[in-house]
Each structure stands twice: as structure tokens, then as C-alpha cells.
Amino acid sequence: MKIKAPVAKNEQLDVKIMDLTYQGLGVAKVDDFPLFIENALPGEEVTVQVTKVQKHYGFARVTKWSVESADRVVDIDKTYRQTGIAPLQHLAYPAQLKFKQHQLEELFNKAHQDVTVAPTLGMANPTQYRNKAQVPVRKVKGQLETGFYRQHSHELIPLTDFYIQDPAIDTAIVKVRDLLRQFEIPAYDEINDKGVIRNVMVRRGYYSHEMMIVLISRQQKIPSQAQLVDQIHKALPEVTSIILNVNAKKTNVIMGNVTRVLYGKPTIEDELLGLTFAISARSFYQVNPQQTEKLYQMAIDKAELTGKETVIDAYCGIGTISLALAKHAAQVYGVEIVPEAIEDAKVNAQKNHLTNVTFEVGKAEDQMATWQAAGVKPDVIVVDPPRKGLADSLIESATKMGPKKVVYVSCNPSTLVRDVARFNELGYEIDGPVQPVDQFPQTPHVESVTVLVKK
Ligand code: SAH
Image (cartoon, rainbow, N blue to C red; front, side, top):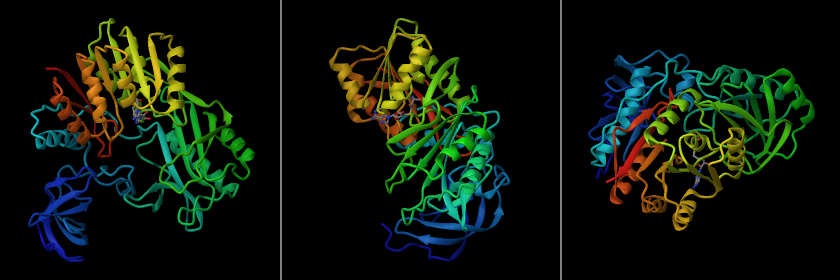
């Protein structure tokens, strides 16, 4: 172990970038001591100034590029790279797709697992794809602003064009911002825990064009609420739902537990693979509708259903994968922890005239054990967990039920690799290549589909 870092704060040095971290930072090594460098790409030779030194690693910023990467693209706007919105926008899109494939390959390699990773399935136009925005509202230089945080901070950078969002959503955010200014509604002040509007969330149906606006407020009532709501839906004809969400806590969690409909319906509708879905404010819904159709189609194809199977969809959200699979299976069971999402899922089953689906509210790990105890014998289990991956107990109950196949939709390669190792111990192995699907262009997020079969 190193006693002393080989670099000091403010020191200038010439380095070569060897790698890109999961967060999209360039990595250079000085005698094995890693320096993380914003806006630096593998292969580049740069002069850097050290900005921070910690025990096992440091940070630096580029002051001069001697050799630039062939994969570097000119920043459209450097704020996109500086915020969490598009930290990879300086990397050409084909190189982003390779980077994601490589992330998975490396993690499987490190875990000594011999796995093939297919090339990442990308988008033809990897911008303006998001169907949802969740932006902080803060006072900056005396004025209420909407925008995005600088990475690793709570400093708001005002933005009006978010680059990766549906432009109709960008327009809506600016309109809401202008109305908040006009009615002099105070922005949330995080430091003193004062003010009113914390965040604005906008979701727009890709096919339906129905728009939902959620105003996330520290207070039960927004000043001039009735006029504000009236002006919002007058200014934005696509708006079919305006929701108040109250979050009085001092927390980074965006939404609170109370939601009230201020105008229109509690849900908006959208379509995926020809099915209709109602989506409420607090339900999870995939943010890249074009890629989601590809992702789900892949999960359906990989499940290889004939119409006779019993299927479990764990972490089912509003039932999107469950219902897409129900068309090709005998019986589908879904489980999800958010009660509103399961209410949506039940409505969605009815909307699509699918009666062979049962939805339960609960923790997937508990419900899986319940189904196992009740003697449910699934042929296929689909899991689509959040970033923390699967609970060990879920993998145990799942494998005890003995499905022929497990289709693992993952949004975090490191927990995927960990969970695959556990499945291996319990008699399941990877079948075919791991398939990354780019759900989040311009960001380092890696989504993938993996099939496991009984050994
Ligand atoms: N398959 C869905 C949702 C995937 S996102 C889709 O594609 O739309 C993951 C979902 O898991 C979220 O809806 C989240 O609310 C839910 N979730 C998180 N932890 C959970 C747990 N322990 N048990 C069940 N669901 C959980």
C-alpha cells in the first residue's frame, strides 16, 4: 500500500489516458496511482493540473491536449458534459456503444466468467429521446431557474435545451418556469430548507403525446395555485394531467408520499409494442420508448414462449413486460413494490383485454418465496431489478422453482455479474451472448439482457 501519493495538489504533469471510468472520467496512472480526469478520452495525451489528492486516487483537469482521440466530438455545449444529463457527449456515438459493451466484458472478465457480450444495440438518432424530465427548481443570481445539477454537486446550471429530452418537454419546462416566475412562486432553497417548488417532472407519451406535469412542492399548497394550474394547461394544450406532489422532507429523494390531481386525469397513456399503458406520477416507466420496444422484444424473443408457459415478471412496474409476455404465455405473475404501479398494472391488463395476468404488491424477494411455497412452477422468470440488483433470497427462491430459463434485464453491470455468479452456484448458466441495449445514449448507463438456463 502506498504511504504517500506520487502527485501533489496543483502539480502540472503530462499523462496518457488509459481508460474511461463508469462515470465517464478519463483515467491516467502515475506510478499505479490513478488520476480521474474530466473531459479526457482513452488514447489522449494531455497536460493536467492536479485538483484533489486522496489516499488511493486523485482528480485532475486538462490544461492542454497534445494528442486528441479520434473518437472525440466537439462539445455541442459543455454544460451537457458537466451535468449528469450527457456526461459522454464528447465521445462519438459508435465509441459510446463500444464503451458499454467493453464495460460488461471487463466486469465478467474480472470475475473470471467466460461470457460473450454482443455489440450494443444503439439508436439511429441518439438525442432527444427521453420521454421524462425531472428538473430541480432553484434561485440562481436572484432569479428562479430550471436546469440540472453540475455532476457530484447541488449547483444548478440553468438549461433550456436539455439535448437528450423530447423537445416538447424542454418547451414545457420553460413555460412552467416562466409561469412560476410570473406568479412569484418561491423556488426551493435547499440550504435553509425554505421556499416552495423543489422540482418539476414532465412525462410525455411518445405515441399519444399526452403530457403530465408534476409540481413537487415543499408545502401542501402552492401560492396562486389555481391560476398557475389554469395558465399551465392553457399554455400547453398537450397537458392532460397536472399533479401536486408534496415533499416536506430535507432529502435527496425527489417525490414525497402525497400526490393530488390539480387538473385532468391521474395518469397519462402511452403505447409500447401495440399495447396501451396508463402511467401515474410515481410509477416507473422506461425513459427511452424507442429502445424500450427493442429491449422488450428481445426479452420476449429470448423467453421463447409457445403459449403454454407460466411466467413470473419480478419488478414488473406498471406491467409492461408482463403484458407483452401475456400475449404469448398461459399465465403471468407480476410483482412490484410501488402500490400505484400495481394499480396501473391492473388497469393496464383490463385496457388490453388480458385476463391471464395476476399482479401483487410487495417486495419481489418476499413474493417469490410466497409463490415458491404455494407451488407455482414457472417455466420462465423475468427479472428487471433496480441498480442494486437481486436479493440473494430471490435468487434462491427463483432457482428452487426450477424454471427452464431466467431472463435478466439489468441496468447495472456490476450487480448483474455478481448475481450471475450466484445463479451459477445454484445450477444456472448463461446461454448465448449478453446483449447490451443502449437505453441512455450520451450517458454511461449500461442496460442489458442476459439469459440463464438450467445446467
Ligand atoms: N419492468 C418494469 C420496471 C423496471 S424498473 C419496466 O420495464 O417498466 C424496477 C422496478 O422495480 C421499479 O418499478 C421499482 O419500483 C421496483 N422495485 C424496486 N425494488 C423492488 C423490490 N424490492 N421488489 C419489487 N419491486 C421493486
